[in-house]
Amino acid sequence: MKVFVAAAGKDLDSMVADRFARCPVIMGIESETGEILEAIDNPYKDGTGGVGVKVANHIIQNGYKAAIGPQTGPNATSALEEGGIELFTFQGTIRDALEAFNKRK
Amino acid sequence: MKVAVASGKGGTGKTIVSTSLFLSVNDAAYIDMDVEEPNGAIFISPEIEREERFSLPVPSFNENICTFCNACAEACVYSAISVIPQAKKVLFFEELCHSCGVCKYVCPEPGAIVEVPKEIGTIRVGNNGNFVEGTLDIGIPSAVPLISGIKRYIPDNDVVILDSPPGTSCPVVETLKDSDYVILVTEPTPFGINDLSLALDIVRELEKPHGIIVNKHNEKVSLAREFARSKDVEILLEIPFSRKVAEGYSKGIPLVDIEPEYRSNFKDLIERIRVTIS
Ligand code: SF4
Ligand code: SF4
Image (cartoon, helix red, strand yellow):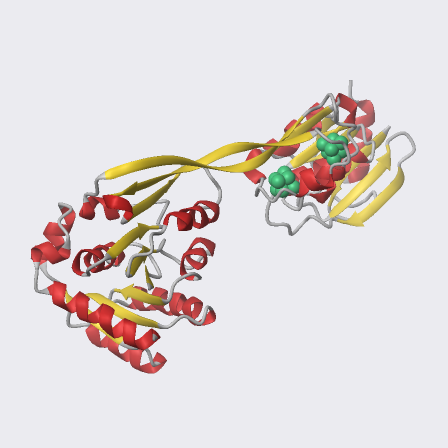
């Protein structure tokens, strides 16, 4: 499954970021294989408003099915929920997050 | 001529000065542009003749026509739109929208976006058009559109007093940019002078002729005088602290009714400003 991660760094040993929309790195992972699909510096990070919506739009438009990160803000949450994106909150490394995500019910 | 009355922060006596000017000068109009807290009416007691709701256009999406191409969301720099093809839905975050009209402009499907009015405040006109005030609705993110909307109601009296919002942000700039002269009202305290200094920077940036009125001046008035000297600005008037004035103010009695001799001071001041800008 194509999973979005709000990441603090660009590899699997990086932490899940502690802020969702303003995370340092936007990462996409194939959850079964752990393959990194994208890992880019978050271009929206320093925006003044609507950052949550921008990141949610990125997730929806790029066909992600789930999003791993900290709690999302209200606007992002409603957009992601409408888009049927599964929200998985996690604190720790991305590797551990993936393991927990794959074991979820 | 349009004379704006501004101050670096609230509570310096901006309203005392602007309402006194209005009440002292012949053929004057008073425009309250402090839309988040209009209070000139308390001192002027205008007879309101007209009250109009003011609105801005915002997009409304027809999901039966929309093809969910995402062009609108991509074009919206304020991220007020989320297009969700999976759910055949468009989410619109009204509080982020700045009514720029770009989404409608870029939409390839006629009728997918129509603009609908969103009310943001009220404009009241009274005293034969010589009194105008705007009140921003609670929760509206920017006062700028309403302030620019008020300008359409400004009459062509000889002297138009613009009561500016306090501070140094966009609504202040929106108010000052159409004025011919700016009066900055301050109190002679370290904080007051600091805020005055910020306000002065803006006025100079806008290249508006300007002067200072020191309100509640007391033994610390030298602070304001020194500042004015160092920045080479004229002090137009000093209003000494007076218990009588403060008490009257708290009851909504204008300064020039408590101390009528100020009327001639304010009249003179306007004539001096007229000479300065001519
Ligand atoms: S641009 Fe028009 S057609 Fe495309 S998603 Fe927006 S509203 Fe729909
Ligand atoms: S009017 Fe402008 S700010 Fe509002 S949704 Fe459309 S593009 Fe965005």
